[in-house]
Amino acid sequence: MNIERSITKPNPHRTDRNKIKTQMLIIALQSLFLYLFFLQSAIGEARQSNTIVKPEEIKNWVGFLASDEMRGRRNGSPEMIKAANWIEA
Image (tube, rainbow, N blue to C red; front, side, top):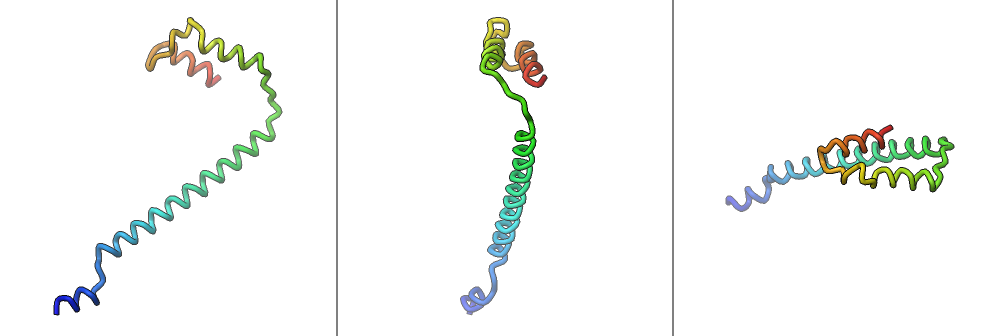
């Protein structure tokens, strides 16, 4: 008789897992939507920008960041902070 009860009675743990899976799916879809929305706006801004970077400029930037003056840019070092501020500007 216990078998009949277990067959007809829904498992509360299973329904909780289904609710959690559904909530996780909704959160994942919302995150994907937001990501695509912001990606689209970023692409639109990039298309509107007419800035052209010349290869010589890139060579100078990499040269500065790789120079002996920057001393390897270890985490927390003054050189790392200097490089971060330079890149940000």
